[in-house]
View: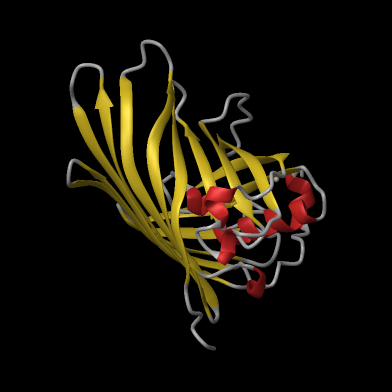
Length: 268
């Protein structure tokens, strides 16, 4: 559930000259809560229902941006089993897009199954760099030319959408696993008006534009035709996501915004 990787593209070569970032003032520091539920399941699929919540917090913290994301979902299977899956992310990213720190945890039925912690640094805009993991083990990972960190990717994508570009492709590092980074294809699927049910939640989501974007995640450098997984997001120009669909292949889980509130900035 890599909402932070959106919030994750033009050929990779075009990203060697990273576009000027949208100013931090155009993105809204906020906390959002989503209701997660199964929307569709193929006949014969093992998963018959999904229920849960996800919270996402993004904050302008002076010299950088902080992101906190937590999800807790219960999966129901045809044979009667249930599995509780949890996921959490805490990260900091510098506003120049060159430094990134992360701590990610995965939990199954109340037990921690994996943790990833580390930091990454790029040599300059549009250049490569290096990531260093301290958990689950000491690991150094070279980052290819053109790598973006999650918030820089979100900002770059919104900038291209505002300019009328319908396609963006980038390599993004978020530290979600030891592979480190993914190639993410983003395609504009429409610009719907804010729906009434969302607009009443907060002035933050009362006025568009809204971009409906399809994201496909590929293992970096594999040149595969089929993505590892896909997401569809409805995102406002201030960076707030109002709807998301997580495609697991044999079933799809939808997230609907239930609550959103503005967060005070650090007052730099």
